[in-house]
Image (tube, rainbow, N blue to C red):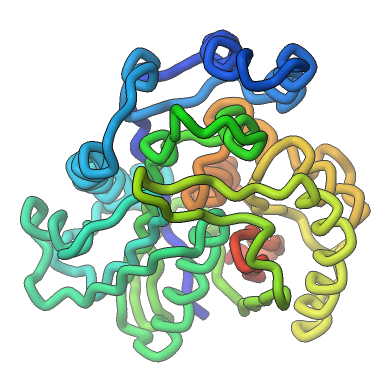
Length: 359
């Protein structure tokens, strides 16, 4: 089965404490909501302590055109994406030796927060020494589910081509989609949650012989699920000024009622029981999302500690977030034979899951 050997990240250079964002949000939204102080508790209750952005907080006080924001997206996605790739290929925590860029057969590029043609991975190939014959698979529009979906598609590629070395690169600069003049509650909630994050994963097929430090997760299977007629749960409204966030207040309830049967179906297909899982690589969409995971799956709180810690330190970085969780779990050194599930939820409304076993 295909194996995940390394995860590398790139941290945007402007860390902003949640208290600073609360002050900014109060200044921005207080004329729009009479109960602003009550609404701002979403910031304090979300357990996010710090986030990282591609621009400092002062940049968000001024309006910016879609073109200006997208130009920044392209520039920063290339720079941070290249940095994450290098961190992945030279990750001494899990790799016994560095991997050459020229050895990479394909790059899956995942993003939903900016637009570029040619796509970002093509621009990165012009500054890093990849082979010109590297296959490019850009995927747009999967939102928070994109990281897990990228792993699933890379897994399927490696099943077809067992000699392949594949990169999955997630670049999400959520802050650049911020709409200063959007006074909706969706925007307020989004302002409390979303951050910028970049992560890259190295996956290889069965016939690739690369020494790893300790056990690494092989992928046993994946499952994609789409909820019918749920386009209004989360996503973007695309307007003249750019991307406006759609974020239903019912997401935790939907997770509670909808996710458990999907997890059960997935595990049953692989003859694995929930209590046999040692690791939960779950995308922390927010505190309420983590609580919904815990409630519907009957998990002990400690099983979600890594997801919660990533949420506290980085916020919701859309598709990249689940890869940050994966990196933290891999570098803690799971034992051979331990199993885990990786999962993320996104627009559609949809879920993506992978079954993992360390070997």
